[in-house]
Image 1: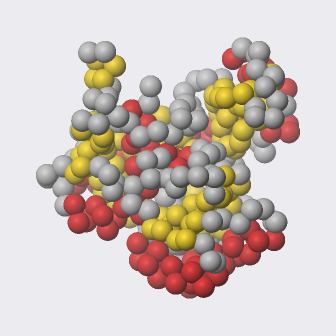
Image 2 (image 1 turned 180 degrees about the vertical axis):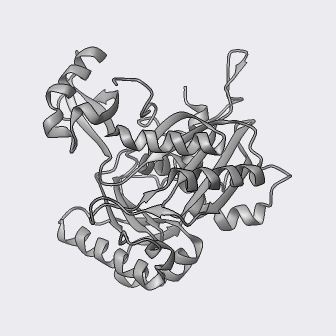
Length: 345
């Protein structure tokens, strides 16, 4: 459904951190909880305005075990909605977020996130019609099964007659899965985002300046993802994922060595692709995997390496454990980016 809110790429071209008192006239923007659904755990972050910045008012991570095996051996495991919903409900009871509106994200090979160029004179309706015409070329799944959204951005730097259009799409079944899990967990889905873009948004205030190529790495037991960005761009040049075997329980058993092997494969693919080599790696993911993998990463690249801390310039509610938040921060990156959608215009 066009511009339906099923997917929400709005302000992905902006990427600035929220500022001011976050009010629209006299109306305070409604609360929003960022919920990141992984293959073996869910993560939650809630933010609120704090002067010129943000305050973390709730966070948490809750593991779960139940998954259903994917239909195809090359697809990632499918999380059982009841298991995910139960984990969300348990996490919400412990973290005690105020809001019940949630932002979630979709990810994986079935998710389309790319910038296309169309005539700058097109209306939204004409953009939608042109995407429909080009659907066979742009989408890896049938148009009838797709949830699609788009946002018209800046003019093309190479041709001012063309506009850059951010296209986001995924199968409707992905949205139905997220909605079912959230409902079982006691939340109402308000925004569905693209996961890699949510992570990028969480780093908007600390993204390295200049035009250097930057790689955003996420290390998880079920998958290792590497997204390559050109300087301060908000949409990746490419995004590769080395995912786990789909056998039940495999993700829980995967250790540091498996993560290293996946990361090594992604690094070799990056070199073989002949694209620009990253000048910096920003590393997110499970803290134990992050700590154990940094030395190996440093041996394979001369680039700068930094573990992300998305809450570094935020205040923390007095009721929260600031030390625990800092320790979990690399794993909460996507949930933080989702929670920041509260401040979108």
